[in-house]
Amino acid sequence: MIYKHEDGTINTFYQKGETVEYPSDEEVIKYIDNADSWDAVDNEVYEELCERLGIDSSEFDDPDSLFIEIQTQFIYNKCNLECWRRGEIREDFENGLTFEQVKLYAKPEFEYGQIINIRRGLEGGLSKEQVQLYAKPEFKYWQMEEIRAGFYNGLTFEQVELYAKPEFKYWQIINIRRGLEGGLSKEQVQLYAKPEFEYWQMEEIRAGFQNGLTFEQVELYAKPEFECLQMDQIRRELEDGLTFEKVMAQISEQSNG
Image (cartoon, rainbow, N blue to C red):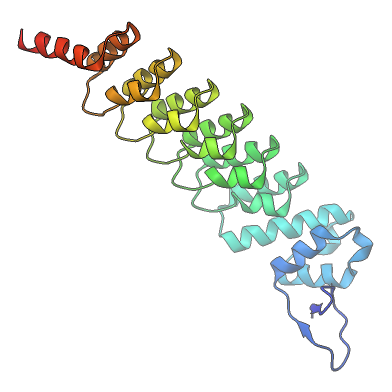
């Protein structure tokens, strides 16, 4: 039997009258993972874990290899994964990923492309918080790639959050990310970071800011009801110094003509 003592220590020793808890397999694995050394955890703890998980410890001469097998088997059992994924999980542990990291993507609801993106983020040095932003089944693999790219390119968590939404299409995400990476403010990007804008509308709004129009000027044509050519004309005329009223009068004349 494995016990958790009041001081947080986990082992197989129990003194009569002592208050103890019975930790779950996951708690024991985390305890081992955080231990200073293998000697800090009793061999009996490993043996009992192996017995619970159906592992023959005699097959492993190296303690590291045994613990990797314990973690792999636990996740495989708990998450009800397909057989082919077991080998990949063990390989990820061998490559240095931690128990907490592997748990982020070792879920049956993730497809292969999603798993790759989550794993690459972890291996590429992203924080757990950053990876958790996109480690969700509702994100397509290409959406995960764009979220990951934003972090790699130096965007803050708050900036990436602006486009880390499943409802955005590919080119919408591209336009939002490019605006942020191009130095637009959060307020400027928020003006067009909305699913109701098509990607070409986003491009016209972004172009207005990049070409020096004020927020108030861009706001005049940042409306989903304007078609692409209308937005383009309004933006160009505003950049040339015309007032919005004059631009709209010209558009009205063209429509009536």
